[in-house]
Image 1 (cartoon, rainbow, N blue to C red):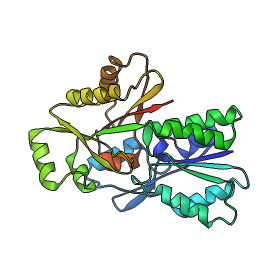
Image 2 (image 1 turned 45 degrees about the vertical axis):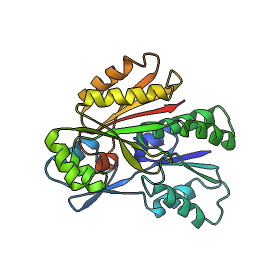
Image 3 (image 1 turned 90 degrees about the horizontal axis):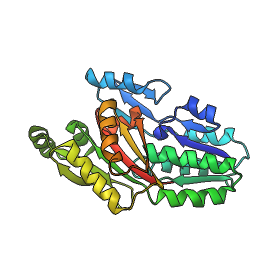
Amino acid sequence: MKIIADSSTLYSPQEGKELGITIIPVSVVINGETYKDYVDIQTEEFLKMIENGGVPTSSQPAIGEVMEAFEEAGEEEILMLSIADGLSGAYQNAVGAGNCMEQNGHIHIMDTKTLAGPHRYLVQKAMRLREEGFHIEEIKKALYKSIESSVSFVIPVDFNFLKRSGRLTPMAAKIGALIKIVPVLTQTADKKRIQPFVIKRSVRKAVEAIISHLKELKVDENYLISVGHAGTYEKAVEILGQIREQFASTSIEILQLSPALITHGGPGCITIQAIRK
């Protein structure tokens, strides 16, 4: 079975190759140039370009790239794990690519309904189950159980990125920057869009609100919590410590976000995500 995903997993194509999977990079556009995640540009370089005035946009993998990945797998069973439909056009592109293939009965495309940490975990779980000899339908069933449990929060610091993405009105962004509020965004119930979750006066208070919600969801040692950051590792470590105080038996990891994901969350943003293993 061939596992295919995109760079929302925070894996590079080279890392994917070493793991025996295919990673299709998402592209970002900045200063009039197009770059592929982890191929043409790395996160540190991307953040520096934004710091110097670059305004980025992103785009999903082209249908042609997805078709090429399908063709390279030949007649082998294919499991495509796409970034959340609604948060990106990648899933619809993958479905379109599958429909363009003459023989596509062996192509299985799953909407992971997530991105970043949980998306990465789903790939890891698929690889583990593949190694354990599970059939693709059994693997899909196991993945669906995890997918439905996933939850994601974003704490941005640059209101201009929220304004450009339509998450905040220009006036709200201006007022928010002036009074130093800390908004938290989360996915809607269908996981297709992003909506406001809570607004606090400090990052610590924002994290406390997220922790309270994770407790309501009964997150425990059977979950993985991921803290993602956009060039703010020290802040991520501090937040991890705050979370660990309340979830001592839960696995918690820190991940650096990809250029494509930073395009939406903005430099300095923090993501806190959880998924049932």
